[in-house]
Length: 260
Ligand SMILES: *[C@@H]1O[C@H](CO)[C@@H](O)[C@H](O)[C@H]1NC(C)=O
Image (cartoon, rainbow, N blue to C red; front, top):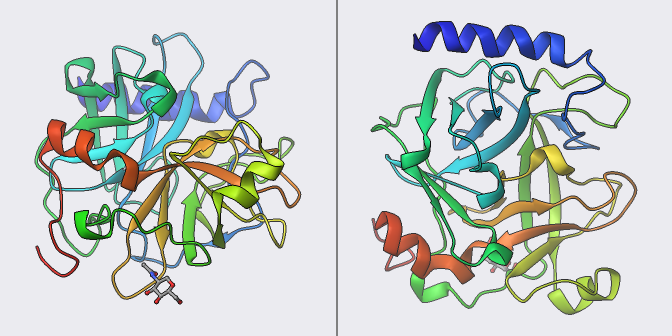
């Protein structure tokens, strides 16, 4: 049954990319193709209200052997499909169908954080996690730090879906600076600069924003589309501000910067 479902979704995906009614939205723009076996924590998410409705796409991040962190807005239908450990769009090294009972959504809709409980995922050279911020450094705002943001999909509204994972390197801005452009910014958001015409778009929603350093940290969850072109900053949900909630649902946390 699972196999049949997967085939249905992927064959309708090919049709969907030609279909005007589809809800596919442009994703990472200004990016480069990810190198093999480098972005092991990203998860492709495919959802549809029913077998006959158009597909919707998003992403998530593996944060432990059993949990994927994403946005709450993707957790709206009876089930979804996770594509794990792949650079090639929607051809996961592992594909899992997850039902609603395994969705955990932040009670405050404005925070838009969601967790997906998964069957045990064994880590390997194809699939790994990204670390959420350790509790002792939860107040770090990472202003000026370089991040890696990846996603699948279109470069602009007119192009076809990307076949390969696209990535950009962008710097974190202060919330003060970002709020000059987006007055609706919340304290629990984090912005990345659009300098060099690099950014995210609505199909990237739920995906990872990870610092580039010896010990990469998942600082953000891609959230709101931000123009989808030009040099506008991209807005994400700040992981640091949801550590208690994440811990309460999943028991995933790090109590030291170098521990576990
Ligand atoms: C952020 O940038 C500072 C200053 O360059 C650096 O010391 C720190 O290690 C960076 N943090 C991360 C998580 O990349």
